[in-house]
Amino acid sequence: MYEVDRRYLLSALGSLTAAGVLPWRASAAEVRPRNLIEAPRFPTPPFTLGVAAGDPDATGFVIWTRLAPLPLQPDGGMMMAPVLVAWEVAADPDFRQVLQRGEAIAHPELAHSVHVEVAGLAPARPYWYRFTCGGERSGTGRGATLPPPGAPLDRVRFAVAVAGCQHYEEGYYTAWRHIAAEPIDFVFHYGDYIYEGPDRGEQARGAKKPLVRRHLGHEIYSIGDYRQRYAQYKSDPDLQAAHAAAPWFVSFDDHEIDNNWAGDIDQDNTTPEVFRTRRAMAMQAYYEHMPLRRSSMPDGSHMQMYRGARFGDLMDAFFLDTRQYRSDQVYGDRDAPQGPEAFATDRSITGAPQEAWLFKGLDRSKARWNLIAQQVCLMNLGYHKAGQPEQLVSMDQWSGYMNSRRRLLAHIDTRCPGNVMTVSGDAHRHYAGDLIQDHGNGKIISSEYLATSISSGADGVGEDDDYTRSSRTENPHLKALTDRRGYVLCDVDRDLWRGDLKVLDTIATRDGTLSTHTTFVTERGKPGLQSA
Image (cartoon, rainbow, N blue to C red; front, side, top):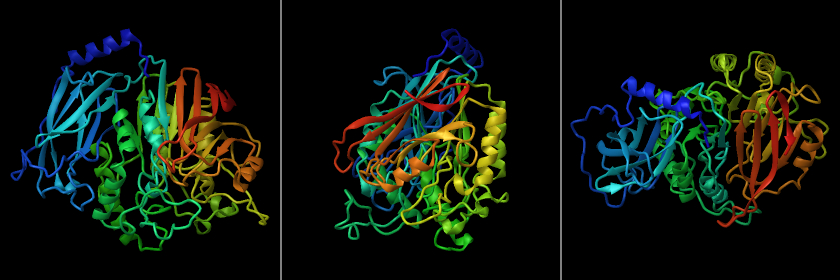
């Protein structure tokens, strides 16, 4: 948990009070539509999808819920009119000291979701929040404010990339239940919150990895399809518990829209203008179900997702978007030998404006550590398939965008050496390794933790497979690799970054046992992972 210098905190609180920013000041009310329903009647309690907090800063955070008394119906079981929702933020979980209360409007245009940007709170401490509507009350969630930028800070502890690839059909969300019990300050969700594919129940009969539960319906395309899929996923009690336990920073990857999409291009050769229509609907549904600020509300088929956060003087975090601005994958988007197209200088995984934003942020950072949190593997990992002479790499990861990769690592090496760590996901395995230019035994520039999936890939095979053996042999900078479900837990202090790779023995049942696969540490100023 945060440990902030007490004198600095009192000084900051005094400055807020002097400026008229008091903890109990309610937010300005939204203009009320003429058809607003102030006292709705529900057939069943409406808070079936839980609550969530996200995008915290030093003065507040977003609190979210969605009214859905019948969540799996296309309209969530709601009347087609705006509905008034009340909210409270308290200094204690029992709400004996309510600091702020207000009202928000759940609009049918946004699936009756609510996004309240709470502000005017004291920095570096937890708060509790809840909603009421139509005589019904939501569960309680826990949010937290960040330390003021530049404040002396000893420690921040967080679960990172824990939510990636949470395929509903392939396993239970046991990892979320454990994350909810961790004493963490925030969660980073790197993407694949939902999967867009159809119910695979029939085709999975007799498979080696049988499905434990099933999607509703066909592959999702319409706004109603996406809303129903989010409702099915968010109905899971373990996922709801993790959302209620701590604030989240969220990012999407590919399956929130379509597998391995890149910019305006999908995997099915759909014309760009048609795919942008699907993308717009998927992004609206994503916004409707995530604790995001208004600045991330979609504008057509685009939404602003790369953003930063500052944790006192200890850490600056940069959350990237490696989908909206990337060039199309080369070599048919297959694992392939790393030919010249992968090194082309006119291709990018981030796009020029986002890259410039990241580089400027790293240049300006005076924090002890910098965190780059993003979606796909930054390590350049090669492997061989049995019987094939050529080494293969993924064209969907940074290894398919080597100009972007070279530029990022060169910038870290020359401008902020020894204090940058990267976290990512998407690959359904735990990876931990050092970052070097290109491939081989080069200079260690930084390190990466790639967190395994929550459920995609079912129970996995551990380390007993040809891919793991080949990858470990051919990549000396790769320190750990295992095909199990779980999450990465990072513990950061002023001079040491610790990463624990947490794994579950099974997600085929709800009683899986959690353990630590391995632990690494990195000393500030000395790039590279060391066994703890």
